[in-house]
Amino acid sequence: MQCSDTAQANGDPLAQGDRRQQADEQDAPRCDSCGSGHLERAHVEMAFWSGDRMVLVEGVPALICNRCGEQYTEDQTAMRLDRLRAADFRDAQQTGERRVPVFTYPKGA
Image (cartoon, rainbow, N blue to C red):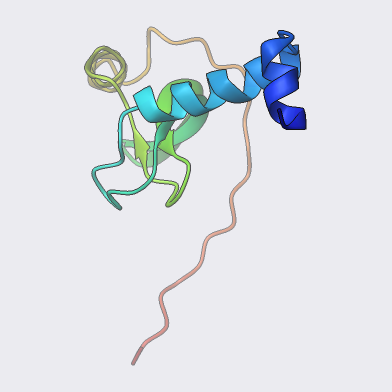
């Protein structure tokens, strides 16, 4: 019996964690963009235009590909963001403000 087999047979929590991680990755949905990555739950920032101002929404639940980084939102999250945008973010509490550098696209490029 190999060392890893012994650890699994004895109920080693590290070995069990490895098996859970492999099972979770196999059960995770695949990325539609790259086709080889798995989607993992995370919270992201998303920027939107609201009239002539840019609005940043923090803590948006998303699914992110562990290979290519593509981000997806579930339908319920997308609908909630759409309602916030439609109301010009009046129903959302502003929690901060950031300054952003502005660049002009170079001519002839």
